[in-house]
Image (cartoon, rainbow, N blue to C red; front, side, top):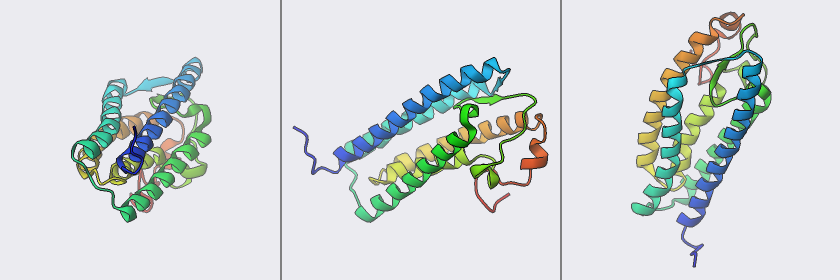
Length: 193
């Protein structure tokens, strides 16, 4: 019988919900990748993708494992704050997906001869989706004080994102107007260069 008074149970449900959202995003991504490739899109940074998948999968498993194995406590104020961050990050991610439409995917695909998307969150940032991921990697584990997961996987994610953003930016720099239009916008943090 499930003890719903144990805060680890609903937390595990939250992580499962995030995992289901990621699976849905993978389905959308797979569909979009197929469409983009028929339009002549070229994938770059393919060798980075398995690393990203490994980090994201390990992250979700570690969130639950740390809370259960190390019996992490729930601090209600921290939990509410981090849940708020999760909602903001999810909203940003869905906003990016809506603005990019079929151009959104979990892979880095470049459509030759197309200009950059400059509406929505791209008015302020070059990579708003990656900002959402960074926030999620800190907030989701800290909902239930899984600080080891937050630290270790935020660092692992930063290493993967660093290479991914460099690869993506190099490829985008070869598309029409990318540097002219987006060059003065910060990558992840509004107000930073």
